[in-house]
Length: 382
Image 1 (tube, rainbow, N blue to C red):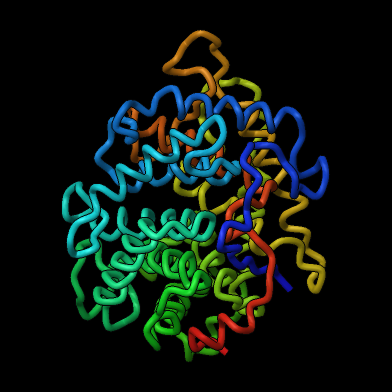
Image 2 (image 1 turned 90 degrees about the vertical axis):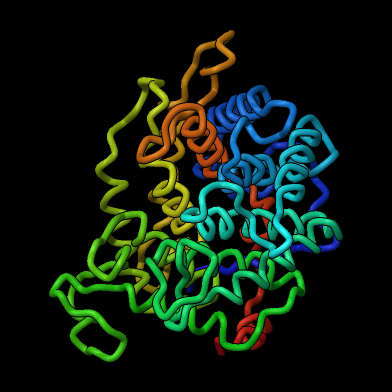
């Protein structure tokens, strides 16, 4: 069975420096990975700017920068990057709207930025129990609940409609709810089961069938899709992460999507160019790394997803990180590739790469192991 993580709250996570204390062994992390992570964090700190937002008004990107530090064990106000965490969190909290919305970009990015930023605040709250973060997080969660569409998904704009737009939005909001649920913040009945249903409805079999009640959908290979039709590695991984984080370990869709993800990782070539290009675009990498970790090594089907695939991702990240000592704009960075370019793309790529390299440290509440029974009952998933 896959592993589930539950938050430590009330200040239990007290180690404040980025050094691996939870890693199982050298196949998870090594000195080269630690050095690459530190170079990435140094790039983020060096390029953050006085406002704490890396020159970006995209709260999702600012949140990702924050998440990189948190994932490496750096807490607000403590240690070498404590000030960086403080400033980025301050920027997010100061720009939360009275409605609870965490977006100051265009309305079409409302729920994308909101979901990702809410997830990050949930992790920060689980690590600090900071009342200021808690108040903003509570308002942000209520907005998510109030804008859930009738089919269980969400739209890009913060509004309730009949149908959600796509799987990426459903997963992002579900992760935000999961990020805060085990910190004791209230979740109205029915929200999570409906969201999980929406995720499952985005699965499509290779034979062309879809739907929760169609028996043929289980036949042969298949994967999660963006909109019911377009299957991508990112959506395969995102759907898996959502199911895992809500304890749906025995869902038959998980191994089918993990087969696809593993195949894509196997296609990666050994990288040592230090050209800043990630093994996948940043969005895809963000979910692929989490899917591998959350599923772990499935002994019941003899599939060591995490042990077999994570070292390949890790080593690829080490080999493509830019190494240009003295160049403040490039040394230690990665590019996002995909749809985000320029300085925002470098922030996104570097933050996600650091997050993936820091996963073995298990500092984030979402990466902590624990029992799920109480949470599933509370959320109506038992």
